[in-house]
Amino acid sequence: MRFLYSLAMILATPILLAYFAVRGFRDRRYLERWDERLGFSFADTEPGGILLHAASLGEVNAASPLISALLENHPDEPLTVTTFTPTGAARVQELFGDQVTHQHLPLDLPGAGKRLLNHLAPRLVLVLETEIWPNLFHAARVKGIPVALVNARMSASSLRGYRRLGRLISHALAGTDAILAQSRADADRFIDRGALPERVSVTGNLKFDVKVSASLAETGEMLKSAWGVGRPVLVAGSTHEGDEAELVEAFSRLLKMRSDALLVLAPRHPERFTRAAENARESGLAVCLRSESRVPPRDCQCMVVDTMGELGNYYAAADITFVGGTIEPVGGHNLLEPAALGKPILIGPFTDNVKEIAGQLLEAGAAERVTGRMDIADAATRLFTDAAARDRMGQAGLALVENGRGALARTMAAIEKWLPR
Image 1: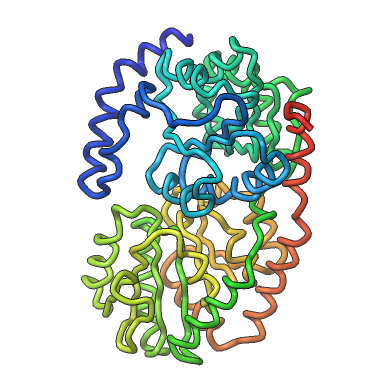
Image 2: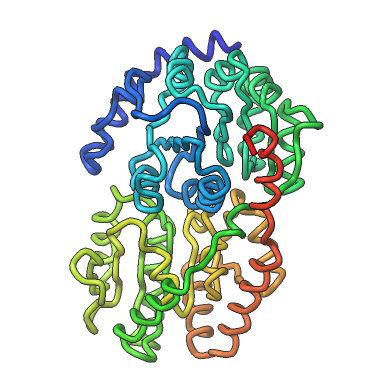
């Protein structure tokens, strides 16, 4: 089965490279470092140490407490962080600079992962969340390098997809040395797909352990003050086109009752920044861009955050937050970031990727479910006028995050056996 997969990867490589080229029209970084993506060039670093893969921006953010702990507890171990997207690479640089070595993970071609492991000679490979790379895992197993899936999750839709791949996925998962799952449901799905039960444990979600710095709260207060005390602000983070269409229409309705309100849109993907602004303008909103000014003018009704790495600042300045990928059937993104900042959260019906956390937030009263523009407009109008309700929701989210901490300690305890004391 892995032979057929490898053949398919070889045949698909020109298509994948063409995809990078097309993405490169909007984000030039996709046109760079193709030799790394093909496994023919590697970052200059000392052999040995730890290889940690976090595919994109969200995974890098989730991995940041673990990376910090590894740097603190094992300062003499070289740490290489691989990503698959330029936004992930930029976030690694922003958070850790030269404390870690960055490398794009090569496509899962036969031989590419082997060449990477030959160069790095890591003592341990850690892979974040849902990434399963059959050829890389096989190369590590042949070399006797332990592989652990950390903060591992598998949605119901992913499970259905992996079932179609049969033995390819079951062999890859059976060869891992540990799967540290976010929840019992995730653990059961990995076991269903072939992971050995004795190697699967529930350690929790690392995102609960992301620390909110005092400076972030201060930045939020500064932004809020600059925007105008009393100006109601809805910040929508990690949005997709379907989310934005509903949000923009909802906000047009809301402006009839609160003409001074501000919608802040932070699209998930940088190549959509321009399109998101155009769509909002076409809907009749006065639009401004973060790249033009950090503080929107008073006549701006919709600010598009066309920069990366600043979503936390805007969540911190919000009265109400909305998390994207939930109106459009993507499955949802990080709900814990606004919760950790004590902000009320609106989420759409599609939360398959964050099902357990969404359920906990809804049950705790920290979040509300909205199905479209009418619900969004009604909920935002009500919450903008009810400070006590906003505070109750925010405090419920903070309590949930605080009670959920501990995944980092459990993850570190699980992987320490492969690391020198």
